[in-house]
Length: 302
Image (cartoon, rainbow, N blue to C red; front, side, top):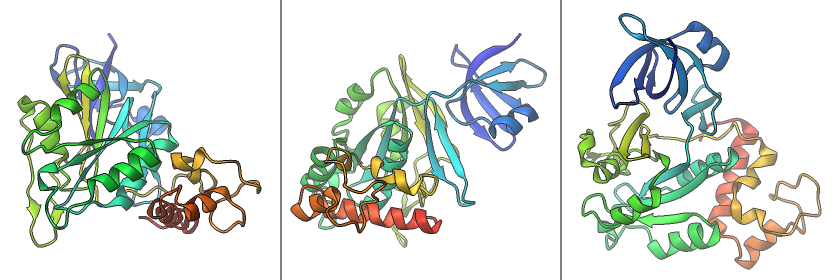
């Protein structure tokens, strides 16, 4: 008898399914599923049949949403499916805030129509000489681009209650660079998760990977979270060059350009370029757009 079950995690040799009662079971995946869809990912709803010694996945239901990046092989890679909101976790410092990485994830989420918010972790280090300016981040991403920015500290618990309320009743996916504290944030939301937390490499200032594959975790009630591996890079070459500007919300609210298919990089009289010159659009966000546009045109990873 077939059952519709959600995928907790997916690997090369099969998947782990989350049964309705909270139990998890391992399952193999039919070759037809790999051939037709590329295989299941975390968050997928699948049809599966109980067989001995493990279950078998026979089909994947249509996905309501996906978070995608370009893999190191240059192909679109779905990281998670059936998501209500992407939470990009970044650290104020240690490691330093990487706005370029942040812009890549936000653009990828925008391209597939996903709601996205920013979780700034390590607020306890706000007074550190190398810490990012919180008012500046709020100005650029909240006031300028319209993203909700939540400032938290997984170490002290600051802002975690507000974050819990914000994600209530949703399936959210946590993504961000290694060392930003995704796993620490997850454990602060639900200490019973008992996840491994990695320390920052003092020589490279990079985090160690503690999550090796995306995992669907039950927080409470109807609130679920997907914890994704810490990523060194988040390439977005799968986004067509002509559509990239639409992935920057602050660009979309301006008057239409005089030129059809304007890429907002060199055309005279372009409202986006004028917005940068007047200060309406943040210069660093625009420079990030130009960098991403160049990478897409040249087909090189970021």
